[in-house]
Image (cartoon, rainbow, N blue to C red; front, top):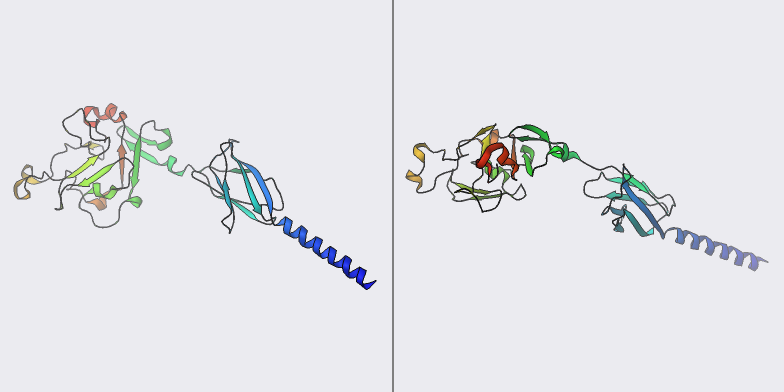
Length: 242
């Protein structure tokens, strides 16, 4: 009789182990949408604390294998607010996440006033003081070197105040030069040298940087107008960007 009881206990113990093991390896599927119900493709869905992860397809659907019943799923991706959801033994987990529009609310200064980034139809870049290159610089354009997409900043010489090549719209131009128009607090600059006597002299043939007279530490932000809408504001002077 004791032997029969031991066999039954062993079978029950094995059944409990089998149930627990199965519960640690379930498959979870779901649908990820934004707060308006639109599907979100490319969202990364991962099990917190592990490398087990997948991503949503073009319909916002995901399938994640080997998920523990007590696991926590983490939803991350570009433009969304990071979110976590407990599985709690469920095999289907639909989630609605918030989209992040922080940088779209930034105020951008244009030639005709200010506007929110999301309300602009033109191509712009905005670099604020917190994002500037760190260190000691002699001209403001060095603050955004490598910081703005599609904007090329090259120091032509190694001398302080030396000329700088800036390209916003490539190297083709309907005008004689390719340098953009510089506007300081709404006042367009001529683009000439800031050196006394028209440049040259002891500096050789280098014309100098027209922005060299400004202290980079005084710059609060730099806005870059890239597309043809800048010509509607500044005319042909804005053909190479502003």
